[in-house]
Length: 128
Image 1 (cartoon, rainbow, N blue to C red):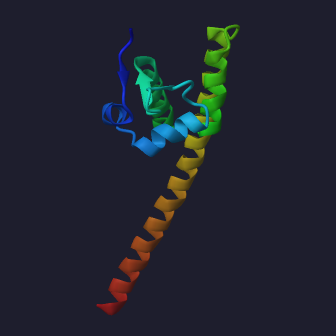
Image 2: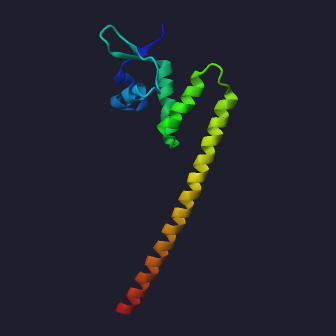
Image 3: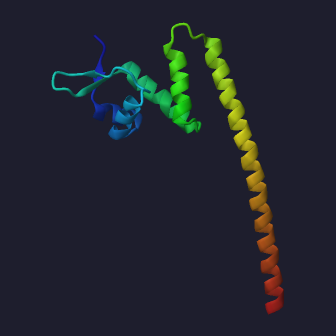
């Protein structure tokens, strides 16, 4: 029989707080969490593995809606590895677009910083 773990144990193992574990179950990112005779959740090792995948996706900045789409692909038996790879390639393209936008924003910020430095230098010369 597979080991099962309490919410507290999973929280400690994954670093996710208990309300987050429940939220991910509620929105369907974790399926079929077993319950003991008292109704307490009992997570499996595969549940813990999925929580780690979810954490990885969150660290990548993937929105929950897209995580749900990816996990749906994984759940379907007829979903191929190629379909999941294509999904990730599409997401990669979105991240690259976001990076380009951030680069533009960073350039604007750098320009403003230089502008303020020049104004500070001008103010200092005027006060001397």
